[in-house]
Length: 495
Image 1 (cartoon, one colour):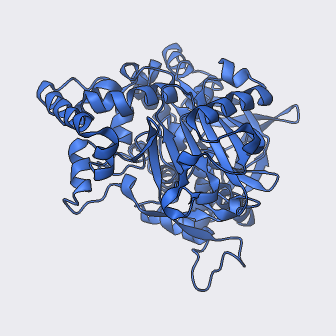
Image 2 (cartoon, one colour; image 1 turned 180 degrees about the vertical axis):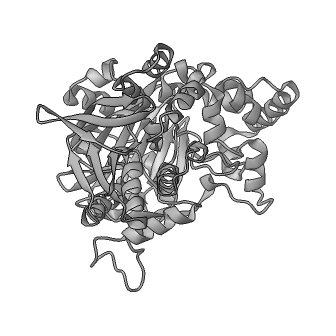
């Protein structure tokens, strides 16, 4: 008799779990419950009238061998025998270009101590930055919040320039209200000293944030996850879309069954193992027999919601055209917006991610304007027309476009609980983890499943570890929660 595995969520973590368990064993019957009607979670790709939108921008780069193997098993890399002009299921090899737009000028991302940086900041400001950093090293603030962490790493001057307003914009909280562990996870090994070493090519190690190239599916990240969903179905998995989990039935220290709602009807599904990538807040809320203190921690776990406006334009403003390349489009995949006068945090240039994301790549530019909001705030509640008007005003303010007449069309996408946040009850997350680990047949994986701002490959790795535990009957789950604790892996300190 095969053991029944229920996987909640068909994002990178959930699909990886299904693929791994079906690839490595014939002893399991797998069912995936996906709340939406798409695959990939926040890594999905939206096709709007032939123009594709990547929710957040997803580079395919990893130092984890098994993750790279899975990607290669899904899509081949372009080469002499794989021509993307003739083959759709293919990884493109892309150049990594991203910069910061601050005070009307472009700065390297991450910040480097380069001629361009000194020129943009000016010698006087650069000198203040260096002395500010030296002062912070002498004082050594306690790293009990994100503000102090950044000041210790970069000095107060650089913190005020590049971190304070941007972080507040992203999270909706002042950095002194955010747990320092977020910065420690996302900015591993980065400081003015590491930036100086990288700028001067001192040392052999290269931070992940400094990678020059990455792989990217021809039609965006969702293409890979849609393909993986087909692969796991071919291997025998059952995928139920638009299946909203509403109850998790726990008997003592085991979960016996899941109730999900589909088409207005509740259905019960029994399972021997539960692999969950659903938000911890919802997981605990739907579970019976949970102690009040654990319920309270989960209920107050914070998230940041996400809105992105796709904007198809005829051309960009003069600051966003490369004068050194015959007035061609700037090469950035995305640009971080560090401007206190706008709410926009970042914009993507989809043409540079993949020319195949844009229906008319030669004559139009397809942008994704990114905003981080709360579901109950005024931005989320705006109609698409209202939000488009708001964004266009910010585009004009930044000089991203010269005139509204340059806009051809817009399209809005929203994602709830896109980013788990590190404040409010996050400081009690260890209590929650201890309780969840006490449920024998429950395995929490992925970004929301662990309430941890993991990159895509680390989300996948949590599932790889969970499957290994299930197949080998390993009870200790610390390996699953310890993914992404190494000292030097890092993709971006801002997003």
